[in-house]
Image 1 (cartoon, rainbow over the protein chains, first blue to last red):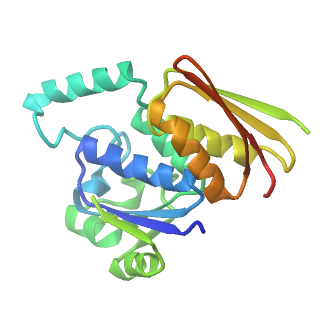
Image 2: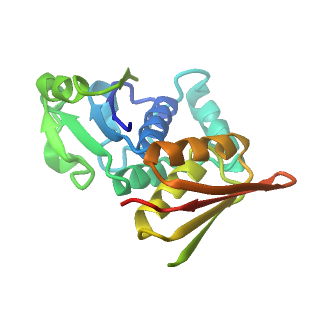
Image 3: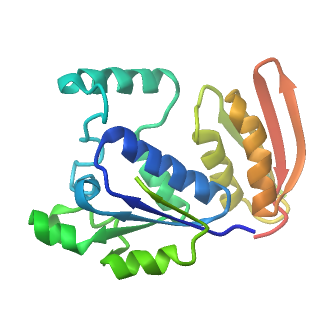
Length: 139
Length: 76
C-alpha cells in the first residue's frame, strides 16, 4: 500500500519550507518513500546556516512577523526546522539539489550542506522520481 | 520482547507521527511500542499510519486530553 511522495521545494520562505518538511516526514511516517527536489529559492535553504533563514511568505513585516510566528510555533510544540530535517533524514527521506540553480546562482557544492544531499540532478531526475509517485507537490 | 515508550505530551503535528515511525523502526519484530500524547489529530492519524505500515494496533486508550496508543511490530 505505501507508495512514494516527491516534492519540488521551489520557495525558500520559512513557512513553505515547514510545509514541505512536514509533508515529507509525514509521508515517511505513513511508510512511503520520499524525495525532495530543492530548486531556485528553495535551494538557498540548503546552504550552510541557510535552513531557517527564510522570511515569512505573508506578513513578514521586516522580520517581526517571522519572529512572532516562530515564538508561537515554539509555544504550540511545533519542532524546529533542524529537527524536522534530521528526522526526515533518519527516516530515509532523500534530498536532491538542482544543479541548474547552483550554476545560475553561483553556488558551489562546498557552500551547501553536503551532508544532507543525496544527489545532484536536473529535471530528468525529478521526473524520474515523480513518474512513480502517487503524491507530487510543488511548494 | 521489549516495550518501547515514547512520550509526546505537548508536541504538535507532525511530531507524534514521526516519533511513532522512528520507534517502530528501532523496535524488533514482536516488540510493543507505546506512544502517549495530547495532540488531537494524532490520535486518529497514528492508527491510520499503523495500518499503512502493516503493523498491529493493540489499543487506544484515553484519559482526559491524554491518549495512549499501543502498537506491536509484526513486520520488519
